[in-house]
Structures are given as structure tokens and as C-alpha cells.
Length: 191
Image (cartoon, rainbow, N blue to C red; front, side, top):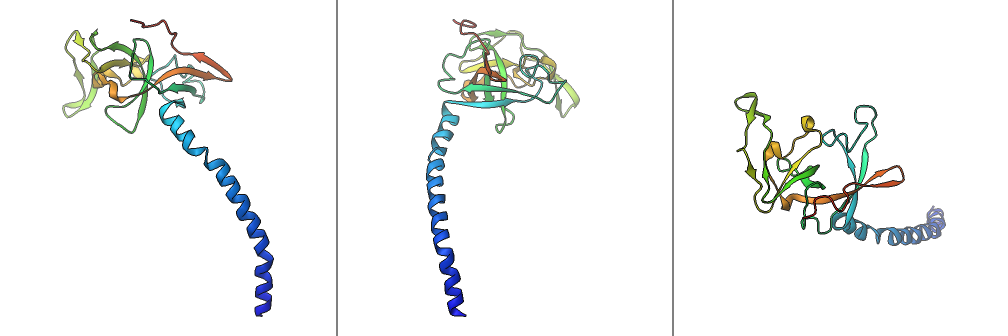
């Protein structure tokens, strides 16, 4: 009985050695790319799926017609520097930091904005109007953002100016099929 067990384990030994060698080779080959990929995605650029109607019709032009959504290339390097009016940015939601949202920059620090009145859920009932001061000035280190589809957008009209520290990226391109479509021309919003 002992000889039968010994012969069966010796039969598996060469195969386990080959498996271990191949596994180690593939692990080294592919796992070494993981840290640079994560670093690139976190600090340089990433491809992001745009979901929801708040930027309709610019993004998700066929939102009500089909399930397809737009994919975008979001540039992350130096994004907090030189924010300009008209740019489409991504930022952490001030009300839910786990969410990253996409909106258009409407005002930069020092701009005078006339916000829209918005209905919000609150203690006073199903919807109360929040009115900001007429001619509100965007504070230093903040931007005013709005969605292109005002009826379906929770934006600065809802939560006020957004701190530039929450900005995570600038949408550079929309990926449509195998084409790259430029989002905002370089000349728009230059100071």
C-alpha cells in the first residue's frame, strides 16, 4: 500500500513542477503590469462610463432610446490648475463622496452667478425652494457647475459652489465607436 501511494505522488510531482513554473511565469508577466496600470488610472487618465441623464444631450444623446452609454477619456494630471468656463469635469459629489459626477463648469472663482431656484426634499415637506442670493460670487478655490439637462441635474444650483479640491478629472474625449471626439476645443473659455 505504501508503494502505491509513493508511486502516485511521484507521478504528480513532475506535473506540479510544470504548473508551478508556468503559474509563476504568468504571475510575474502580468502582475508586474498591475501597479503601473493602477497608478496610470489614478493619476494620469482613465476611461469612464458616463451614466445618467444630467448631461443629456451632449452625453448619452440616445438616453431614452437605447441602453448604450458614452465612454469618455478623463484626463487627471494637473486638472485643478486653470479650470475654465465651458470645460466638462468630473468631481466627487459634495453630498455623496463615494460618487464621481460629471458636469460643465459655468463659473470660476470671482464670477457672478445667478442661480436657479431648486426644489429639495426637506423637513418642511415634499419640496421647498432653496434660493441663493441674487448675483452670488463664486468664492476663491471653487467652481460653479451645472448639468446640460437642467431638469434632471443635481448640480451647483442644488449644493452651491464646488471646491476645486473635489475635482478629479477633465473630460478630454468622448469615445464613439473607434473614434475620439474632442469635448471642448482648446480656445473655449481661455482667459
